[in-house]
Length: 357
Image (cartoon, rainbow, N blue to C red; front, side, top):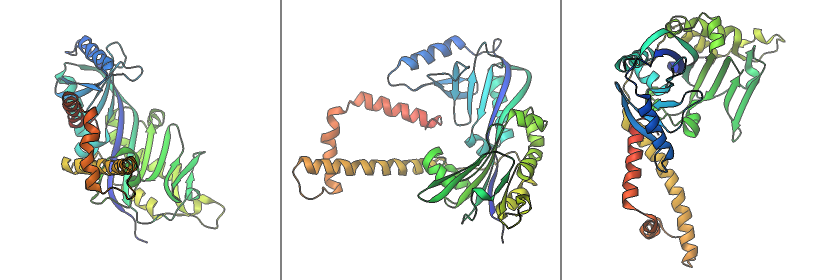
Protein backbone atom coordinates (compact mmCIF):
# COMPACT_ATOMS: atom_id res chain seq x y z
CA UNK A 1 0.00 0.00 0.00
CA UNK A 2 1.34 3.44 -0.92
CA UNK A 3 2.12 5.79 1.93
CA UNK A 4 0.02 8.97 2.23
CA UNK A 5 1.53 12.06 0.63
CA UNK A 6 2.99 14.63 3.00
CA UNK A 7 1.77 18.15 2.21
CA UNK A 8 3.29 20.18 5.07
CA UNK A 9 5.16 19.65 8.29
CA UNK A 10 6.60 21.97 10.90
CA UNK A 11 5.81 24.00 14.00
CA UNK A 12 2.20 25.17 14.05
CA UNK A 13 2.29 27.06 17.36
CA UNK A 14 5.01 28.03 19.81
CA UNK A 15 4.77 29.61 23.30
CA UNK A 16 7.88 31.23 24.79
CA UNK A 17 8.71 33.31 27.88
CA UNK A 18 11.26 36.13 27.48
CA UNK A 19 13.08 37.85 30.32
CA UNK A 20 13.29 41.35 28.88
CA UNK A 21 14.43 44.40 30.84
CA UNK A 22 11.42 46.54 29.96
CA UNK A 23 12.10 49.15 32.66
CA UNK A 24 15.08 50.49 30.72
CA UNK A 25 13.32 50.16 27.36
CA UNK A 26 11.47 52.74 25.26
CA UNK A 27 8.12 51.09 26.05
CA UNK A 28 5.69 53.60 27.58
CA UNK A 29 3.47 51.54 29.87
CA UNK A 30 1.52 54.58 31.07
CA UNK A 31 0.54 55.33 27.47
CA UNK A 32 -0.40 51.68 26.90
CA UNK A 33 -2.57 51.75 30.05
CA UNK A 34 -4.28 54.95 28.89
CA UNK A 35 -4.97 53.54 25.41
CA UNK A 36 -6.19 50.23 26.83
CA UNK A 37 -8.59 51.96 29.23
CA UNK A 38 -9.96 54.15 26.46
CA UNK A 39 -10.70 51.04 24.38
CA UNK A 40 -12.19 49.27 27.39
CA UNK A 41 -14.63 52.11 28.03
CA UNK A 42 -15.57 52.48 24.39
CA UNK A 43 -18.80 50.95 23.16
CA UNK A 44 -17.50 50.51 19.63
CA UNK A 45 -13.72 49.98 19.80
CA UNK A 46 -12.33 46.46 20.26
CA UNK A 47 -8.65 47.41 20.09
CA UNK A 48 -6.31 50.34 19.63
CA UNK A 49 -3.79 50.33 16.80
CA UNK A 50 -0.34 51.06 18.25
CA UNK A 51 3.11 51.29 16.74
CA UNK A 52 5.80 49.99 19.06
CA UNK A 53 9.28 49.94 17.62
CA UNK A 54 9.39 48.00 14.38
CA UNK A 55 5.90 46.41 14.65
CA UNK A 56 2.29 47.56 14.52
CA UNK A 57 -0.14 45.84 16.87
CA UNK A 58 -3.74 45.71 17.95
CA UNK A 59 -3.74 46.56 21.67
CA UNK A 60 -6.58 44.55 23.22
CA UNK A 61 -9.06 46.00 25.69
CA UNK A 62 -8.24 43.32 28.27
CA UNK A 63 -5.07 41.55 29.37
CA UNK A 64 -4.56 37.82 29.88
CA UNK A 65 -3.78 36.85 33.45
CA UNK A 66 -1.32 37.66 34.86
CA UNK A 67 -0.22 40.05 32.09
CA UNK A 68 -2.09 43.39 31.86
CA UNK A 69 -1.33 44.07 28.19
CA UNK A 70 -1.95 41.95 25.09
CA UNK A 71 -0.57 43.05 21.71
CA UNK A 72 -1.43 41.09 18.58
CA UNK A 73 -0.79 41.03 14.85
CA UNK A 74 -0.72 38.17 12.35
CA UNK A 75 2.68 36.95 13.55
CA UNK A 76 2.59 37.16 17.36
CA UNK A 77 0.43 37.55 20.40
CA UNK A 78 2.65 39.34 22.92
CA UNK A 79 1.68 39.59 26.57
CA UNK A 80 3.51 42.30 28.50
CA UNK A 81 3.80 43.38 32.12
CA UNK A 82 6.07 46.11 33.42
CA UNK A 83 6.37 44.43 36.82
CA UNK A 84 6.11 40.81 35.65
CA UNK A 85 8.94 38.29 35.70
CA UNK A 86 9.31 37.26 32.93
CA UNK A 87 8.08 40.54 31.47
CA UNK A 88 7.05 39.05 28.14
CA UNK A 89 5.17 35.91 27.09
CA UNK A 90 4.75 35.30 23.36
CA UNK A 91 2.61 33.00 21.28
CA UNK A 92 4.14 32.68 17.82
CA UNK A 93 1.09 32.25 15.63
CA UNK A 94 0.43 29.57 13.05
CA UNK A 95 0.32 31.86 10.02
CA UNK A 96 3.67 33.47 10.78
CA UNK A 97 5.32 30.12 11.51
CA UNK A 98 4.17 28.53 8.23
CA UNK A 99 4.77 31.50 5.96
CA UNK A 100 8.01 32.86 7.43
CA UNK A 101 9.53 29.88 9.25
CA UNK A 102 10.15 29.59 12.98
CA UNK A 103 13.75 30.81 12.92
CA UNK A 104 12.88 33.85 10.81
CA UNK A 105 9.93 34.62 13.08
CA UNK A 106 12.14 34.36 16.17
CA UNK A 107 14.62 36.75 14.56
CA UNK A 108 11.74 39.15 13.83
CA UNK A 109 10.69 39.09 17.49
CA UNK A 110 14.22 39.86 18.68
CA UNK A 111 14.44 42.66 16.12
CA UNK A 112 11.24 44.11 17.57
CA UNK A 113 12.57 43.85 21.15
CA UNK A 114 15.78 45.59 20.08
CA UNK A 115 13.82 48.33 18.34
CA UNK A 116 12.09 48.99 21.67
CA UNK A 117 15.37 48.97 23.60
CA UNK A 118 14.33 45.86 25.55
CA UNK A 119 17.42 43.82 26.47
CA UNK A 120 17.21 40.10 27.26
CA UNK A 121 18.60 39.38 30.73
CA UNK A 122 18.46 35.56 30.70
CA UNK A 123 17.73 32.82 28.13
CA UNK A 124 14.21 32.35 26.82
CA UNK A 125 12.11 29.39 27.93
CA UNK A 126 9.74 27.34 25.78
CA UNK A 127 6.50 26.45 27.57
CA UNK A 128 4.69 24.69 24.72
CA UNK A 129 5.35 23.57 21.15
CA UNK A 130 2.83 22.17 18.66
CA UNK A 131 4.18 20.23 15.67
CA UNK A 132 1.92 19.41 12.73
CA UNK A 133 2.17 16.92 9.83
CA UNK A 134 -0.48 17.32 7.11
CA UNK A 135 -1.26 14.42 4.75
CA UNK A 136 -3.50 13.86 1.76
CA UNK A 137 -5.72 11.08 3.08
CA UNK A 138 -8.57 10.13 0.72
CA UNK A 139 -10.07 7.46 3.00
CA UNK A 140 -10.15 6.80 6.74
CA UNK A 141 -9.78 3.12 7.58
CA UNK A 142 -9.00 3.39 11.30
CA UNK A 143 -10.84 4.18 14.53
CA UNK A 144 -9.97 4.88 18.15
CA UNK A 145 -9.19 1.18 18.76
CA UNK A 146 -6.41 1.40 16.16
CA UNK A 147 -4.24 3.60 18.40
CA UNK A 148 -1.70 1.93 20.67
CA UNK A 149 -0.72 4.44 23.33
CA UNK A 150 0.66 4.98 26.82
CA UNK A 151 -2.04 7.60 27.38
CA UNK A 152 -4.97 6.66 29.56
CA UNK A 153 -7.55 8.46 27.46
CA UNK A 154 -8.43 8.27 23.77
CA UNK A 155 -11.37 10.29 22.46
CA UNK A 156 -13.10 10.35 19.08
CA UNK A 157 -15.52 12.92 17.66
CA UNK A 158 -17.97 12.29 14.84
CA UNK A 159 -20.21 14.50 12.74
CA UNK A 160 -23.13 13.13 10.71
CA UNK A 161 -21.86 9.60 11.30
CA UNK A 162 -18.37 10.36 9.98
CA UNK A 163 -15.30 10.43 12.20
CA UNK A 164 -13.60 13.82 12.24
CA UNK A 165 -11.11 13.86 15.09
CA UNK A 166 -9.15 11.71 17.54
CA UNK A 167 -7.42 12.99 20.67
CA UNK A 168 -4.94 10.87 22.60
CA UNK A 169 -3.83 11.92 26.06
CA UNK A 170 -3.99 15.18 27.99
CA UNK A 171 -1.65 17.35 30.02
CA UNK A 172 2.02 17.36 29.06
CA UNK A 173 1.53 15.42 25.79
CA UNK A 174 -1.54 15.48 23.55
CA UNK A 175 -1.63 13.76 20.16
CA UNK A 176 -4.39 14.72 17.74
CA UNK A 177 -5.30 13.15 14.41
CA UNK A 178 -8.07 15.07 12.68
CA UNK A 179 -9.71 16.30 9.50
CA UNK A 180 -7.98 19.65 9.05
CA UNK A 181 -10.29 20.75 6.23
CA UNK A 182 -13.33 20.36 8.48
CA UNK A 183 -11.53 22.14 11.32
CA UNK A 184 -10.81 25.12 9.04
CA UNK A 185 -14.45 25.29 7.96
CA UNK A 186 -15.86 25.00 11.47
CA UNK A 187 -13.28 26.68 13.71
CA UNK A 188 -9.94 28.18 12.71
CA UNK A 189 -10.82 29.58 9.23
CA UNK A 190 -7.15 29.25 8.20
CA UNK A 191 -8.05 29.11 4.52
CA UNK A 192 -4.53 30.15 3.49
CA UNK A 193 -3.48 26.56 4.24
CA UNK A 194 -5.39 25.47 1.13
CA UNK A 195 -2.83 27.26 -1.02
CA UNK A 196 0.11 25.79 0.88
CA UNK A 197 -1.33 22.29 0.48
CA UNK A 198 -2.24 22.81 -3.15
CA UNK A 199 -5.70 21.41 -2.44
CA UNK A 200 -8.74 22.10 -0.26
CA UNK A 201 -10.02 18.60 0.52
CA UNK A 202 -8.97 15.23 1.98
CA UNK A 203 -6.29 16.61 4.30
CA UNK A 204 -5.74 15.11 7.74
CA UNK A 205 -3.33 16.45 10.35
CA UNK A 206 -1.24 14.55 12.90
CA UNK A 207 -0.42 17.00 15.67
CA UNK A 208 1.80 16.74 18.75
CA UNK A 209 1.17 19.26 21.53
CA UNK A 210 4.02 19.11 24.04
CA UNK A 211 4.26 21.22 27.19
CA UNK A 212 7.26 22.33 29.20
CA UNK A 213 7.47 19.41 31.64
CA UNK A 214 7.78 16.87 28.81
CA UNK A 215 10.03 19.13 26.77
CA UNK A 216 12.40 19.37 29.72
CA UNK A 217 12.71 15.56 29.83
CA UNK A 218 14.01 15.79 26.28
CA UNK A 219 16.58 18.46 27.27
CA UNK A 220 14.51 21.13 25.54
CA UNK A 221 14.40 24.43 27.42
CA UNK A 222 15.21 27.26 25.02
CA UNK A 223 14.07 27.83 21.46
CA UNK A 224 17.55 26.93 20.27
CA UNK A 225 17.38 23.51 21.91
CA UNK A 226 13.89 23.04 20.49
CA UNK A 227 15.23 23.50 16.95
CA UNK A 228 18.11 21.11 17.65
CA UNK A 229 16.28 18.38 19.54
CA UNK A 230 12.67 18.58 18.38
CA UNK A 231 13.12 15.67 15.98
CA UNK A 232 14.35 13.44 18.79
CA UNK A 233 11.35 14.03 21.04
CA UNK A 234 8.94 13.56 18.13
CA UNK A 235 10.53 10.22 17.22
CA UNK A 236 10.12 9.06 20.81
CA UNK A 237 6.49 10.19 21.00
CA UNK A 238 5.58 8.62 17.64
CA UNK A 239 7.10 5.26 18.57
CA UNK A 240 6.79 4.74 22.33
CA UNK A 241 3.99 7.09 23.35
CA UNK A 242 1.45 6.67 20.55
CA UNK A 243 1.25 4.80 17.27
CA UNK A 244 -1.46 3.94 14.76
CA UNK A 245 -1.83 0.26 13.96
CA UNK A 246 -3.79 -2.11 11.75
CA UNK A 247 -5.84 -4.23 14.18
CA UNK A 248 -4.94 -7.92 14.08
CA UNK A 249 -5.57 -11.12 16.01
CA UNK A 250 -2.49 -10.89 18.26
CA UNK A 251 -3.51 -10.12 21.86
CA UNK A 252 -0.40 -7.94 22.16
CA UNK A 253 -1.53 -4.78 20.37
CA UNK A 254 2.03 -3.46 20.13
CA UNK A 255 2.75 -6.26 17.64
CA UNK A 256 0.01 -5.14 15.26
CA UNK A 257 1.29 -3.86 11.92
CA UNK A 258 2.00 -0.15 11.70
CA UNK A 259 -0.61 1.76 9.70
CA UNK A 260 0.61 3.40 6.45
CA UNK A 261 -0.21 6.87 7.85
CA UNK A 262 2.12 6.25 10.78
CA UNK A 263 4.80 4.78 8.54
CA UNK A 264 4.70 8.01 6.55
CA UNK A 265 4.84 10.02 9.78
CA UNK A 266 7.91 8.14 11.05
CA UNK A 267 9.59 8.60 7.67
CA UNK A 268 8.93 12.32 7.76
CA UNK A 269 10.02 12.76 11.37
CA UNK A 270 13.30 11.15 10.31
CA UNK A 271 13.79 14.05 7.89
CA UNK A 272 13.93 16.60 10.72
CA UNK A 273 15.61 19.05 11.67
CA UNK A 274 12.65 21.08 10.36
CA UNK A 275 12.15 24.76 11.14
CA UNK A 276 9.06 25.76 9.16
CA UNK A 277 7.98 26.48 5.63
CA UNK A 278 8.84 29.63 3.72
CA UNK A 279 6.44 30.23 0.87
CA UNK A 280 4.47 33.10 -0.57
CA UNK A 281 0.72 33.10 -0.16
CA UNK A 282 -1.58 35.45 -2.04
CA UNK A 283 -3.47 37.36 0.70
CA UNK A 284 -6.36 37.89 -1.72
CA UNK A 285 -7.00 34.13 -1.70
CA UNK A 286 -7.83 34.18 2.01
CA UNK A 287 -9.87 37.35 1.58
CA UNK A 288 -11.95 35.80 -1.20
CA UNK A 289 -12.54 32.68 0.90
CA UNK A 290 -13.81 34.76 3.83
CA UNK A 291 -15.92 36.88 1.47
CA UNK A 292 -17.51 33.71 0.11
CA UNK A 293 -18.41 32.51 3.60
CA UNK A 294 -19.82 35.91 4.58
CA UNK A 295 -21.96 35.82 1.43
CA UNK A 296 -23.25 32.34 2.30
CA UNK A 297 -24.32 33.62 5.71
CA UNK A 298 -25.97 36.67 4.16
CA UNK A 299 -27.80 34.47 1.63
CA UNK A 300 -29.39 32.51 4.47
CA UNK A 301 -30.50 35.75 6.15
CA UNK A 302 -32.02 36.98 2.89
CA UNK A 303 -34.19 33.86 2.74
CA UNK A 304 -35.54 34.63 6.21
CA UNK A 305 -36.20 38.26 5.23
CA UNK A 306 -37.94 37.13 2.04
CA UNK A 307 -40.26 34.81 3.95
CA UNK A 308 -41.13 37.53 6.47
CA UNK A 309 -41.79 40.08 3.71
CA UNK A 310 -44.13 37.69 1.89
CA UNK A 311 -46.13 37.07 5.08
CA UNK A 312 -46.20 40.78 5.92
CA UNK A 313 -47.43 41.71 2.41
CA UNK A 314 -50.02 38.93 2.28
CA UNK A 315 -48.37 37.08 -0.61
CA UNK A 316 -49.14 33.47 -1.35
CA UNK A 317 -45.95 32.78 -3.35
CA UNK A 318 -42.39 33.37 -2.10
CA UNK A 319 -40.59 36.57 -3.10
CA UNK A 320 -37.88 36.36 -5.77
CA UNK A 321 -34.31 37.26 -4.79
CA UNK A 322 -34.40 40.49 -6.84
CA UNK A 323 -37.52 41.63 -4.99
CA UNK A 324 -35.95 40.94 -1.60
CA UNK A 325 -32.79 42.85 -2.57
CA UNK A 326 -34.94 45.73 -3.78
CA UNK A 327 -36.74 45.89 -0.43
CA UNK A 328 -33.54 45.98 1.62
CA UNK A 329 -32.95 49.77 1.51
CA UNK A 330 -36.35 50.42 3.03
CA UNK A 331 -35.67 47.87 5.77
CA UNK A 332 -32.13 48.98 6.57
CA UNK A 333 -32.30 52.76 6.18
CA UNK A 334 -34.22 53.45 9.44
CA UNK A 335 -31.27 51.97 11.37
CA UNK A 336 -28.53 53.40 9.15
CA UNK A 337 -26.30 56.22 10.35
CA UNK A 338 -23.67 57.10 7.76
CA UNK A 339 -20.95 58.36 10.19
CA UNK A 340 -21.36 55.23 12.32
CA UNK A 341 -21.29 53.04 9.19
CA UNK A 342 -18.03 54.64 7.99
CA UNK A 343 -16.44 54.40 11.45
CA UNK A 344 -17.41 50.73 11.90
CA UNK A 345 -16.11 49.77 8.45
CA UNK A 346 -12.85 51.61 9.09
CA UNK A 347 -12.39 49.71 12.37
CA UNK A 348 -13.00 46.40 10.65
CA UNK A 349 -10.61 47.26 7.80
CA UNK A 350 -7.91 48.26 10.28
CA UNK A 351 -8.47 45.06 12.24
CA UNK A 352 -8.31 42.82 9.16
CA UNK A 353 -5.04 44.46 8.08
CA UNK A 354 -3.60 43.64 11.52
CA UNK A 355 -4.76 40.02 11.33
CA UNK A 356 -7.71 40.55 13.70
CA UNK A 357 -10.35 38.64 11.73
